Picture 1 (cartoon, one colour):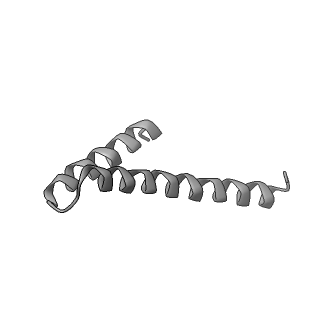
Picture 2 (cartoon, rainbow, N blue to C red):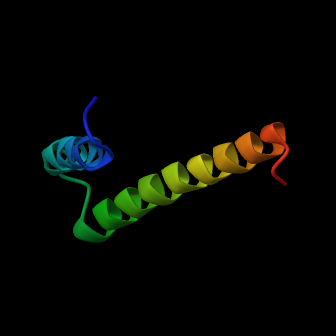
Length: 59
């Protein structure tokens, strides 16, 4: 299984390779999109962690 850092790197490179194709996307929009993706994934992982702890009776 590949490491988490390798998977994040692949996702980041794929997003960065797609963004320059669209001419309407400026630097600020690209940064906002990447931050939104990172915060969304972090939030989903946090919610899954809380759910797993509740399910195991640790909380």
